[in-house]
Amino acid sequence: MRILQVNSAKTFGGGERHFVDLCQGLVEKGHEVFALINPQSNWIDRLHFLNDRIFKISIKNSLDFPASSKIARLCRAERIKIIHAHIAKDFLPVSLACRMLQDTKFFLTRHVLFPMRSIYRVALSNLTKAIAVSEAVAMELSSTLPQEKIVIVPNGIRVENWLGLSRCSREDFLKLHGISEEAQIISTLGELKELKGQREFVLAAQIVLNEFPNAFFIVVGQDNTPTKSFRRELKRLVNILGIEKNFLFLDWVEDTAELFACTDVFVSPSRSESFGLAILEAMASGMAIVATRTHGAMSLLEDGVSGKLVPIRDALELASAIKSLLANEELRKMLGKNAQEKAKQFSLGKMIDQIEELYRSSIA
Image (tube, rainbow, N blue to C red; front, side, top):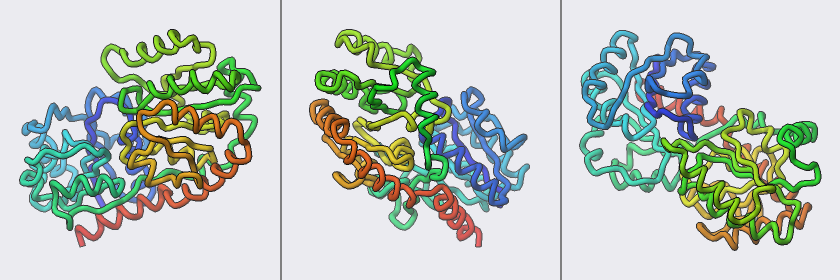
C-alpha cells in the first residue's frame, strides 16, 4: 500500500513518537510510506529511514485550504491511496484533500482527551476511520464522530528494547551525571508543562527528602514554550525549597533505557494523560511506578498490583506513595515484575498489525 502519514507538529512529543514508530513499522512490513511534516520540524532526522519520501508542507491552521491543494497534488503524483493525519490542526486540510481526490481513504489518530470542535461533525463526514489510543479518547470522540467510525488501537512500543536493563548501564549513567551510587533515584519523563504535573513532582520531592535524604530526583523533558519559562519556574521552585543538590534536569535522554536502568521509582505526575507512552516504557523496564489517576495511567496500571495510583494534583499523596516504595525493595520488585508482564500486551507489532488491517479493509 502507498500511504501518506501527516503530522505538522514542530516539536517532538508522544504523538510524534507514535508517528515515527508507525511509519517505520509499516516500512518494515513492505509498504510504501510517505511522510508530510512541517518545514520547521525539529524531528525530521527521526524519519531517516524514509529517505526521499519526506515532504515538507506548511499547514498553518485548520482552515489552510491552499495546503489541501498541495496535499492533493502530492497524492496524485505519488499515487497515494491512504492518508493518515495525526494532529487536530491537520484534520480539516487532509479531509478537504481527500475530497479533491475522491478515491483516497482518510484516517486520523486522536492522541489527546480534549473535546473536538463541533465543526468536525460535518467537516469530517468523509472520514474512513478515527483511531483512538484509549477507551477514554474513544468516548470523547463519540460526542463528535459516529460511533461506527471509531476504533480503539492502543499505542505500542518495542517491548524488547526495555527488557534486561543492566547494572552497568546504571553505573555509567550515574557517573556521567555525577550522582552518588548510593542514591535512590526517582525519575519522571515528559514535556515540561503544567499539564504534566512536574510542579507537584518537585513539591513531593521536598517531602520525600525529609525521610530519605539520599533520594535523588531526575526530571527529563523539553520545555517547548518560546521563552522556556516553565523550566525556569521549576528550577526556581527547587532552589526556593533548598533541594537543588538532589535534582537533575535533562532536556532529553535519547535512549530512555539508560534512564530506567538507574531508576528505583518512576513517577508520572500528569494532570491529564490519554495513554502514557512513558508509563508503558517504564512498565516494560520493570520499574516500580507511581502515577496519578489519569485515564491513561488507569488503563495501564492496577493499583497495588502493577503500580501505585494517587490523586491528581496531590503532592502529599504522591510523596507518600514514593516513600512507601523507597522503603520496601520487595514491593518495588513485585510491582515492577507485574508491570513488565502487563506491558507485553502493548507491543508495537500488535499496534502496527491492527492499523495495517484497518487500511487493508478500507480498500478491499
